[in-house]
Amino acid sequence: MVMPIPVAIRARGPYYTVDILDELPADTSRYELVHGELLVTPAPTFWHQELAARLFRQVDRYLERYPVGHVMFSPADVRWGRETGVQPDLFVIPRAAARSMDWRAVRELLLVIEVLSPATARADRFTKRRRYQEAAVPWYWIVDPDARAVEVWTPMATTPTIEREQVSWEPSGAPEPLVIGLDALFRPVE
Image (cartoon, rainbow, N blue to C red):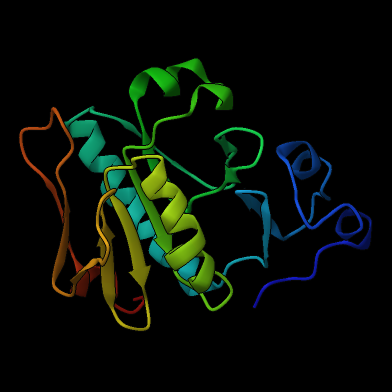
């Protein structure tokens, strides 16, 4: 479900810029912008956040062993020009960008992970996926809790690879890939 756009902002549409994005209310909705299209979604579900937290812990532990990047989570402020501002659920950036402690330095994403929810599925699979591919994000994972699977996209892919047992990330400079078992990822909360 996509949330309604506030009336004051809707009156300025249908094409939006990051300047308008900065004027949006600080509420529980997530506001993103891709090629001038405003994407508004409600706060995530508990299961969405649980999966994002599990993924964050695994990626973070991996990057502690092999410091080829720095993992972050939303809310975020990743911008590519005046018409794109995204908030991936999880993403890995180069360490130099992280050391700057400035969102303006975050231009390159090494891995993006979006956890699907009914409100975000269309945007994650189509609108944002296409923008991540245009930005040459080398690895884009779409985690589908209902299917208990991960769709893996690369910049030139026309269809994803669907992983049902494990998903792996092989960043440049790391001696071994990060491998995440999907049975453990999707296990119930104990």
